[in-house]
Length: 365
Image (cartoon, rainbow, N blue to C red; front, side, top):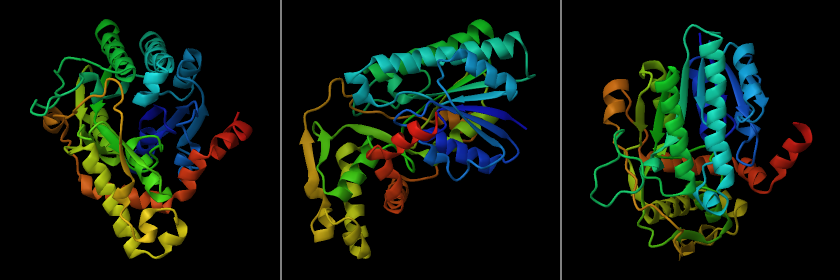
């Protein structure tokens, strides 16, 4: 039986991982640590919060004393570190928060783990798993080979630079102090509970509201898309089979241009409104509610600074050593994600209008 500390466990990927782990490892115990900033949402955990195996703690990963106390109290033997500022546009306009959370916060976690696990030796075995991104590798040309675990780091945004710094800290704590660490670098995630500032959920919400669909530059930027359920399975494999000190790339094997992705979502919206008459009443401002094409909302806008052209992940090492392979195709995943947002309007409306955050500050201090 494992005892896990999940940082950022009320966020998008973290919450999906909590659901995954409780379903796949029902005998384990989980402590979720989350500061409940704008992207952390307790509603993401509503279906499992009553489980005896789950404890939620509101707190900051930079509070080293708090982390040490949690490690001791719950006899934590595994940390899965999701907590991070992750939106590139936000990092361009306000990089300080990214340094504070991604670099200083990760260092705080590592210090606490070193103190409790290596100096106090509270548990016989331990694992510190750090969740990172493919953006640390920089940008690829159209015909360049995909990123491998040996690709030199070349971050191009304050976000990716802060994640690269945190990756190096994790590596250093393994090689200098002997902390049993692993790192995974993933491609772009999507799926349930995705905060509606990122490309896919923002596009879905804008489609339903009849708002413009802004696409940076010429829309030909390419990303490898990874359904969050596949990402959770990949991290599970790293924890079960990964070797301490190693790095594993986890991708979806689904490269797609941004403009093609948005056009696919538009087609999904058009088809959904054709099949369901009730959607026109529920979302009367959507073009599809009037029998118009959703793609009419697409607008090309000025490119953002430092916009990487292409990301692609080579998962050969994870396939070979962990038995990992993505199972959800991009077509399947986008269709399921669109349907999830249709079925969970209450969730994204509460997130976007601020009512959920107001409730948090009023009732959960």
